[in-house]
Image 1: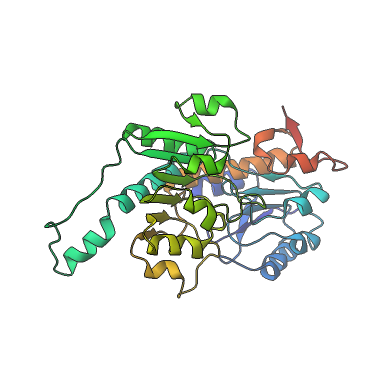
Image 2: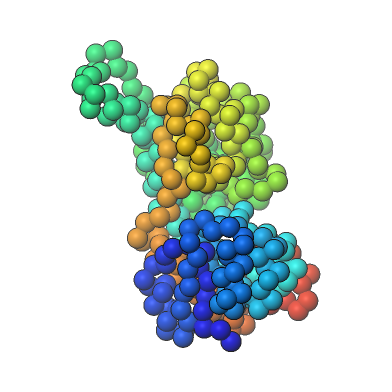
Length: 336
């Protein structure tokens, strides 16, 4: 068996690399955002039985050239870059590092919220350009405002805990979450996304990107939000109709947005967000901290070894477990 694990990205936390070495493996890295052809070449040349997925898409064409591939472990929780069905057809479990980066992403969501509502960037820019804009300035408090959480996973709950400490009221929507996820923080649960939007001063997106959620925030749903509200997105850029968001901000219906993700990454130089000062942007780094990197990297590596050793894996860590139920023979042992 090969002693190499393919990492689709330029780095891996030293603690994760050390764990690989302890088990007699080494990480081989692709360039950042490598396309399918490049990833396929790496898989063929290394014979890797496992992939740690960071950047770049793992589609059926990639898996087709790697019959030896036994497990894909996501460096995080978002799996929209992985063809889950193609993996399941080959009996390949796709693992996620559930909760490992929740604190870091939640902190970043709150940072974007504060920077946007408090207008930190334009005020900083104006001061550096010689403008003292205190006369006539009128800011806003976030205490007492309502934060709407789309999705109630570990990142959303961590975001809610911080927001509650800032005095915000919490509401949420997640058709798949247990009632305990809402009760834990006293989140008022709504039965529909649209109804929740009507009560949101700030909408924070924390759901996966799939056929049901793609562009879930669009012209129609934005119109249901109160005038002067805000959007924060640390999940996936494809959740938002980007043109509709720009139009809503330019019309004054939305007051601004704090975004860590784009529909296509990295974005083109002429992306419309860059010309809208009410939008605060960061390059998808919400979970990129030393602390989260260590936890996520170790979880991703440990999951690979669990699968290779035939050990049970908690069901919530297998993104395609329902699809894998039909796989014969199933390579992932699911722990109920």
